[in-house]
Image (tube, rainbow, N blue to C red; front, top):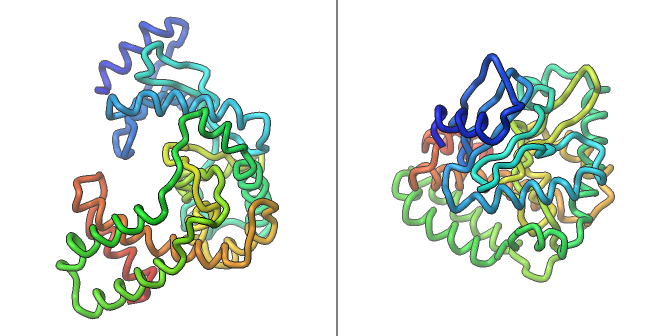
Length: 288
C-alpha cells in the first residue's frame, strides 16, 4: 500500500488516531511499515494475498501475549478489510552485531534468559492453536529439494569452483539432517538481530515480526542467534526448557549457514536483497 493511501486509510478507519510526524518504511520483504510519532506502528501487506496472514498473525499474538514475558506486538488496530493493522511501538535497539558487542556480560545474560524463556513458551504452543491461526507446517524434504534445485541452477554457475565444492559438500551434510519424524513446534522463523529489540532502560527484550512463523524444527529459532557468537547461542540453549535434543545447536549452525545460500537465491529471484550480500554472508559463515 502506498504511503499516501495508507495514511488516508488510517484516518478513515481510526479517526481518533492523530499524529504530527511519520516514517514510511518499504525495505521489508512482506510489509510496508508506517511509524506514527515514534509511538504507533502500522503494517500493510505488500501482496493482497497476505491480508489473511496479517489477521492470523494478530490472532496468534493475542494467544501468546499472556504466555510470554517479553514484549510482542499487540495489534490494537485492525482494518476491517485486513489490509493493515497497527500496534504500539515496542522500545529498544535492534540486537545487531554492533549493538550486542557493546553490551555488558550482565546484559547479555539477561537477554539470553529472556530469549530462552520466550522460545520455550512459543515452542510449547499447541499445534492445534497454531493451525487455527493459519500457521502452516514446513515440508522439510520438499524445502530442501527446492533449495538444492535453486542453488544448482541459479547460484553455482556464478561462483568459483572451490566455492561450488564447499556448497555441494554442505548440501550433502544438510540433507542428512532432514528428518520428517523429528518433533516439530511453532517457531518464530526469523529470530535474527533485527527482530530482537533490547530495551536497556527496562532491561527488557521485545520481539517483532512474526511473518515467517511456521510449524517446524525448533532449532531454526536458534540459528539467527549465532550471528552474535557461539557462546551466546549456547547460553540460550542451556537455559531453554522446551523441545531440546543433543543435535539442536548443531542443526542451528547448519541453518545459520543455509541462510547465506537462501539470500543469494532470493536475490536472483527478485526479492529485496542483493546477491553480493548473500555471497558476503557465505564467505564469512563458511570461512571461504
